[in-house]
Amino acid sequence: MTSIGHSLSTRLLHWAMAFIIISMLCLGSSMIQSLDTWQMEAVKLHKSFGIVALILVIVRLFNKLISKSPPLPNDLPKWQKFAAHVTHFSLYALMLAMPISGWLMQSADGREVSLFNLITLPQLIHADIKMYSLFREIHGYVASLFFLILFMHIGAALYHGLVRRDGVLSSMTSGK
Ligand code: HEM
Image (cartoon, rainbow, N blue to C red; front, side):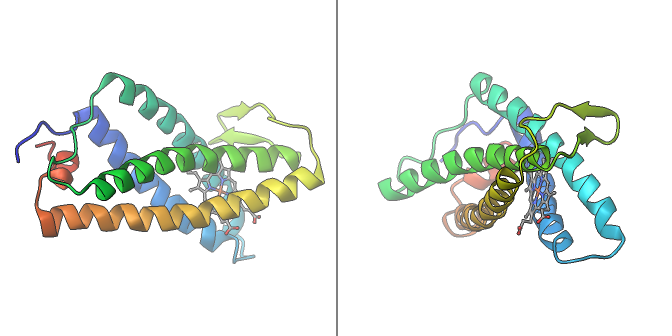
């Protein structure tokens, strides 16, 4: 089946965010298991790149409004189309929930969040230890769910690219 692929802006945003989010999930999970000195620097970088991810997902949502996505293949079983829509919606929700819960957690801990020490962001809520532990837990649970949905998404992409060879994967790689 031949169809028009994703626009260049969609593809650039997709791969830049894929790189940042996978790195952030791995960095986040490893930094909480360490008390070494590198952990302090890692947390700083983690917070700044988390805000970059938040900015990018907002840009991506605007981009989605202006550039049309190609339809899924007509012969794809209905349940797979449904699963694709649910997964994509969940990925957007998680891309927003992850940085916002991190920012709320830091605000509730009374800590400033800055973008690479260049811009200091406003506190989202007042410092409150109970809210801190709530958002810390939410940040961890959302991360676990993100890992799960990402594995499903990558599995589906490989199924389209290697088994069905229906152009869905290449619409996001080469845009064809
Ligand atoms: C795409 C965005 C983000 C991703 C994928 C991400 C991912 C993670 C992950 C996987 C963990 C380990 C969670 C656990 O297992 O308990 C973590 C911890 C953490 N994240 Fe994020 N994060 C993001 C954004 C942010 C932002 C924007 C902030 C703050 C402004 C932040 C602050 C933190 C902090 C302070 C921890 C350590 C929490 C602790 O002490 O247990 N994160 N993050």
